[in-house]
Amino acid sequence: DVITLPIPEPQFCAPYNGTTCSAYLQGRIVMHHTAESIQQRDTALNTQLEELVGRGLFSDAMGGDLCEDPARRMLCHMAFPDCHNQTIQALQVCRESCQAVKSVFCFRHLAELEDMKSTGKLSSNIGLLSLADCLTLPSKWNSSELCVESDHHGYSPSLVRDDCYVEKGRWYNGTVSVTKSGLTCQAWLEVSPQKHDRSPLIFPELVGAENFCRNPGGEESQPWCYTTDIQYRWEICDIDPC
Image (cartoon, rainbow, N blue to C red; front, side):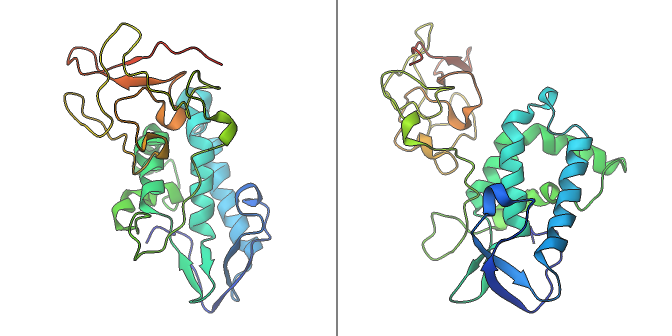
């Protein structure tokens, strides 16, 4: 079970009215419980987040700007799951959202968390530690399963360009397929010669990307690609900023 905070019975659907997750859940219909108020769960989650911040897990040195927002969104959706009105059931986070946080955005942070946990420096009930079970979650691509995306993609139509890139170029949608030094880009669906886990199932900006330059997750400073040259794993592409 990826929800680390206990969920007492009975339960009902109602708008989220807390403060800790207001930036992500304000107005959403979430699962409520008569034996525990939103405020009580808010306090418990805020304590977890403060411990993560206090331990420096979201610091610049740890690449905090990449991990913090997806991590907060994920923990909020885990603590306050969306409510399916017809069945009064809590909707779990989608497998792909979980994998993106675990394998990409917060990979280093999770390793550090596990180390802190093993040495007794961190509480064992931190929600991020439960993300190892991503594969047990429902998939957004399975029409027979219901789940909630934690919306870590940061999409905005104004960021989509095909002739130049905006900000870090996460939503660059052009067809440049060679690197700055002229190396051919490897298709994103291929894992040879460069093995990787950047999948269109996790990053929607890679859907239909073929071997075009992209910046999945906004990890780098501009669009890039894996190369087909075994000696050079990846390289940025020669694309102008807008």
